[in-house]
Length: 434
Image 1 (cartoon, helix red, strand yellow):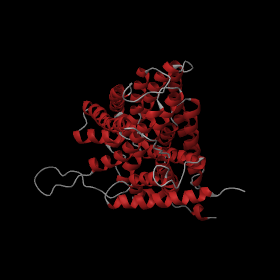
Image 2 (cartoon, helix red, strand yellow):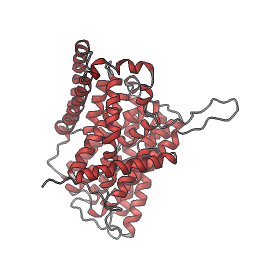
Image 3 (cartoon, helix red, strand yellow):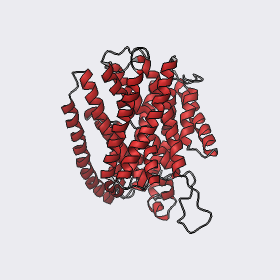
Image 4 (cartoon, rainbow, N blue to C red):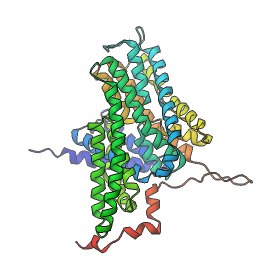
């Protein structure tokens, strides 16, 4: 007999994430924080109501892919090009400084008399690997938060997106370097060649896509639903090729797929459909799944101190590293802080990196608990800090320039849909012919 427990799990996830999302909205915090807390409470770490299943895992994977695809749709490519050099510098410092900070904390705690290591590799490689974990950035959390606040397509928002994509590539290189020292089967040259091949594929696919879309728009103008299906196929294929063939994160492939589609004439129509799909089903499952994955093992006093200090270092090194990189590139102080806050979240990316290190003997099992704590706290702190840094009250008087006025929770897409021109492609007789 088939099990239908996944239906109950799905209902509980959707209900709890919405309720906690509304609660956090009432206290002027991003709703994504509520979704994360809901998953944490429902999972094994607290009430143990829902467990990670293959269904939840796969749906959450689709959820983050669609989320990053939507981020690509909303991105201003011209602005992204303008901040390309700055994004590289921000990402580079956002990798090097957390790497050094994580190594320093691990060097102090990961030794006899403090935390006994059970890993196979040398202590030096283990400590370096803790730093590599801190270099990770889960941009999906920041993307959803910026969308809620209508700040994704801003100077700081584009810098966060660009830096996070480059951070992903630099993180792959760092992870490959350290794992190649512990696993002789890993070849750094092959990894670099695959990354280069991925970038070439993106360029070629982008050119071909625009030629095909130009022909398609002229021939099938009347049925826009086909464009949505075609866009979804492109998103899934790019995510698959990125992960399976080139070894780049699937969300990076999905983001570049969104960039390809965003220059077409039907972007608003496509984006509106994906935004609805993400809101009602995929995004709640993804954010809840992060909390559901959390399982905290028993920890000694030294491990708890290690977790606390590592969390503080994880937060500060991203703010300092990325913020300093932004300052070097001429960003204003407030944008520097915003960019640093947007890069704090480690999310599922750090868990994947930790699992890889554990598999090749680069991390002791005793250190997995602190890593999970870092993931949970940075994932919750990041959207809160983004909300605070982007929220400025208008000055009550004086001759100075008014600062930003806090706006309601509304994504960039939804604001665009309210504009008159967005409805020019939204209603066609063919939509109602069936």
